[in-house]
Image (cartoon, rainbow, N blue to C red; front, top):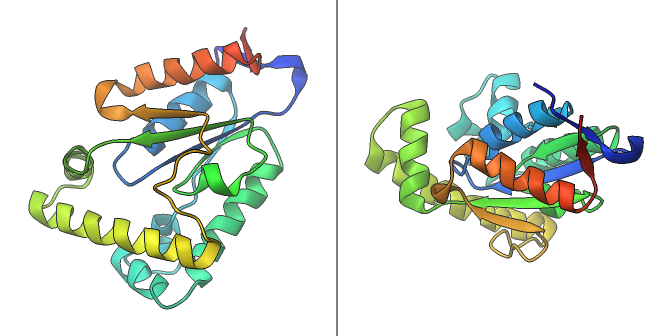
Length: 187
């Protein structure tokens, strides 16, 4: 339900990043609903579906081919530049340089694994191992392809530990910051 409008009829681009299980998709979806703007969240998961592959197969292929990352990242940034939006991706805060507000969501490895287990089911220890492997592989690729250190969040305007808040509280924290910066106003 839309509760806010973008100030002065300008465009607004909010970039939200975080590793798997940090609440990126949940928070971005709630924020997009409150602001009445599109969410852009094209990921390896969607690319895997398009290519009729599993997520694990795409991650394995991405180890030897930059094509996968370039497809996801190029599509997202191109879409984000066309309109007001919430860009939700692992690299959003680094890739969408013109974002009006950049948020990085974090959570402990154990919390992230617990959330992934709740969302997808499976075995907790296997999820922890897969998540560690994926984090390591993501970091390696981002450094190689874009020279981005995804552990350096200094470009973010706001870093939030999602284990301390509900998704709704996180959205309210972001809304408050957007209002302070006169980027949005209540309808």
